[in-house]
Length: 444
Image (cartoon, rainbow, N blue to C red; front, top):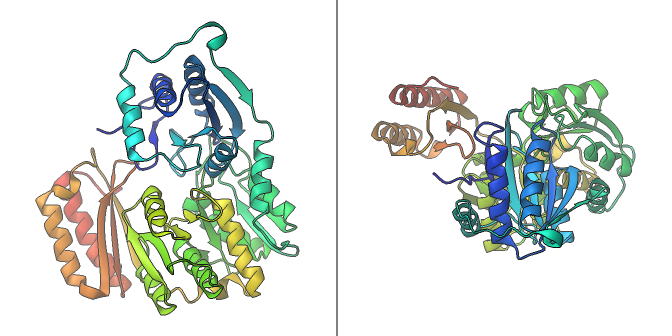
């Protein structure tokens, strides 16, 4: 089974993702990605296992003669940005929105982009090699500290706002994660009145009943503080879910839609096309089509969105989950960059977020999970294939069905979209029952 998933190498820290494995992974990466003396910039989220895995990577890099630059607690997109500016390989130690016990390692090239599959395959192949270099004496690698990493990143993102946000009341849910310091600092620098919540860097509570996976917390805060807008980040701040002034959720689809319409009206949306995944709502596709904008769909995973964006020359793409890429400003999904772009549209248009998101209607969409022992080959099961085909025939052109294995967890994800919520729920329930029965597992 391939070690790298759709978003780096992930697992339960100190169980399947051990320091020993991470040490070997670091040595293999240093061998494949660089010559002697290479530079690696390391950033991590707040997870309790972060320092342990960081230490393994630092040791691995130094053992090959490379330089490990420790940037501390930092959003994953900040690692990508700073790696590019420092001409270093970026390494983010994070499991993003996953539970506390998980962690992961994600590599970025010195260009700021995630590694392509062939390079990841080469790293995996090098894991078992016993002849990787081990310099001694003065040739052993060094460790450097980048004490101003967070400040550099905040300055970069703040520079994307052409006008101050003075008078704007902003709630920021930091999910006890990597945005705990940088997100409040960003909005303070831009002149907004900031209401930070879950803003302690607490690795024992990262993503627990907060952040982008629990947007109801930010919704309640927006209402309580009478804020103009709220932003809920995930653990490593590569995602963001917005909340409008009424307390309603504005997800990644709506964010892409309102930003695309604004950019298209200014003649700044190449194509004009937006790249999204098969999970994005049919309502987004139809709203964009009404403005003469094409929605190009890819398989689930931000790396596939980015690949298609680069192939098409697109400037905007992303996922319903709030992982949005503004390719003119970032090489990966960046929750803080996305938040600034949303506020830019608000300030330039003079409209509230509820008004801007209103044209993006949403078809009722039911999302369910089935936990499985192994997600490999699930869609090849004859009973699962028949159930999916039957469901799509039942909905015809009035909806969509998507059944797919998770890229990071032992789950099968079921999505049903229909004009009528009751119909979507009924179809989803049938699929869940069949998948759970044939796989011998209950719904997650």
